[in-house]
Amino acid sequence: MDKNESLEAMTFPSSSTYTIIEELGRGGMGVVYLAEKNCEGVLDYVVLKSILTVNETNVKRLRQEANVATMLRHENIVKTYGLESIPLSMLPRSLAQSMDEKHSGATVQRTKDFKRRKLEAPGGKHSARRSDSGLGAINDSGKKMYMMAMDFIDGADLDNILRAHFDRGLLMPPQLAAFAISRICRALAYAHEWIVHRDISPENILINNQGVAKLTDFGIAVAADDADQGFAGKLHFMAPEQLGREQVDGRADMFALGLVAYQAVTGIPVYVLKGGLDFKGMVEYVKQQMSNDIVPPHMVREDVPKELSKIIMRMLAMDKKQRFSDMHECSAEIEGGYLYAKGFGPTNNSLMAYIDIFEHQFQKYTNDQLRNLTFLKNAEGKIQLKRKLKWDDYSKLGKKMILGQKGTNSNIYRAIAKLNAAAG
Image (tube, rainbow, N blue to C red; front, top):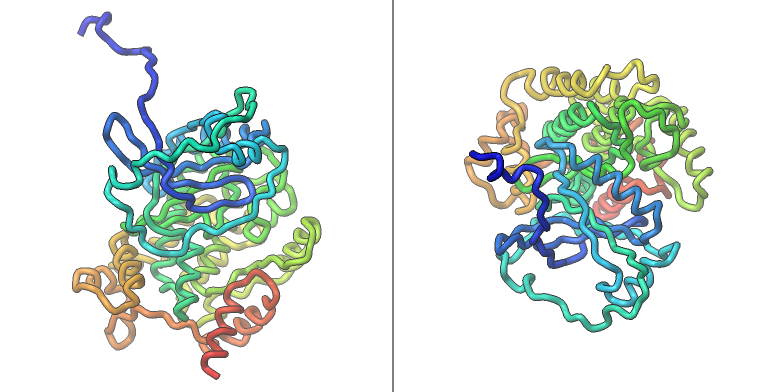
């Protein structure tokens, strides 16, 4: 082809349009929306993550997250496409005015409950445009509402999945919980070539309806060689060096993922938050909990395999030098030392099958789904789909941990209390 006919270096405007369908959730910093994207008549669903205020600090943070996230391409990381923006003059007047204020009175709202979304086919009622009443009439001085466009993950976050199990008096099978953790290990092994996430928690681990675990929310990630020592992330999922405002590396994410794994297999969070404390008091409260030895998971519940318990405890070593050297080693140990040590183990199809069976309350399943779950066979050779949440299944140490979390943000205490009350 003649160079004069090449499109290299050509710049052209995008023809994409977005229609906001619904709000998925909101927190102290922003709102997440489900939107329909139209590219010349080709429709798709995306997620738009916005900020609640348009001050320079928040815009800079969102732009930084977008720049970090867009360069990450991995099966187990939510794909980010970039930033979009809307002039404040195009927004409803009350929303535009609230966004233009220095401080927003936003309250935290959880994302929607664990369920499979039943969305209408593209081009249905969601394609209709909203009324323009109440728009404009604000001098926005060129200010914009910025939104980060990401893949829509049709599924649920791990926190909602664990809560849904509690609601039914169940815990997630340890094999499947460990499988989801192993996929996030792989995601972090890849991401750590460039960044440290610093905000690993159950809320930031998504599992789609095909059983693929994906890591999201890189809003406070820093370069892997950055010596940042500021507070970032959720206090009760921070590594001790992170809480101590020391230099962090990928092993801080490893510790946080170990906390997630511990909670997923036992139902008990290692560290909890307590109401009525200011930020400084909360930091000290978590540090106080860190001064106590962590009880190995298999000593909390006997149905937690010792091999898995040992791996989790190494991830949770207080001295980062005693943890796995990196997420590659950690992932290899979870998979080779536990999940597939005896042959067949969980896959994406296994997790997909289990979640589907769980959603149908274990009343509907196929032989193909059961074949993907044969690693759940018990001593009698029967596939044990349900893992009961019972007070008597916890050891004395486990019961002590649960009772000690009364009055905190621990869901396990409330779940156990509810079950005990129902039992009389």
